[in-house]
Length: 323
Image 1 (cartoon, rainbow, N blue to C red):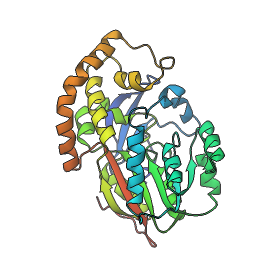
Image 2 (cartoon, helix red, strand yellow):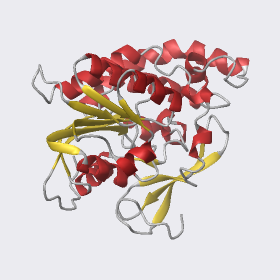
Image 3 (cartoon, rainbow, N blue to C red):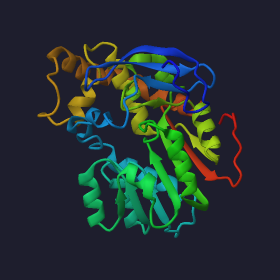
Image 4 (cartoon, one colour):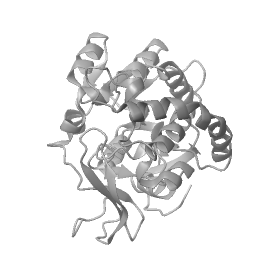
């Protein structure tokens, strides 16, 4: 990355973490570089906001929550409400809301809900449902009508061009005592270490940043937050990623099973019969050892997903504390 300063520490000392990672959508190859000073990993070359949307075609959006959507929404709702009294229904912002399913559920639970999203069709639907709904650039520039009791950032921070900017914006827009919940893939997970370039959750170049517990904690601390709870448990992300990452080692292209299960038939590429047959045949065999490994990884805090719950500090100081 030459003289590009690190988003997290400002240094310009880059080393190669993974030299060649293939994007299963564009078939382009990207590197993952690591800051030698603080350890933050980034995708290189990193697409800017002016071109990133071409890596999010309809094929990528697909029906990604067909099987786990209901479970995921309820788990996320519980993760928020656990930090408030049972009857509390405050003001919530869901950054990068995707389909809007979580925001809609929270609205049904009595929360005054707002969202950001790059999909204009979703924004139109949520505005019709009575929510404040803005594109991210507009929200960063103009803000919202009032601050929030909770801001959620489910698998968004790794996608944005400047995650520190977003975290500081969240700090400014939280009420005192509010919470900021962040979920990202865990580059320090057993999955990431075992499968390196074949790990499902690298997802270059849409994932522009790749966090470990240490780098995520430093970013949040330096943005003015104190981490009050963390976990690496996310059932659906762990179980399927073990299967798909292992299959990536034997198939000729990445994420064949994932595309068969989520991408619409008229949007997915031609998949070889060999790859499809291997994926279906090996999945039941792989599943027999996935569950115990998942349980062990959660127990040892090496699951595939990091979820940090934070509260704003009044006078934050930069910190290198790990969680």
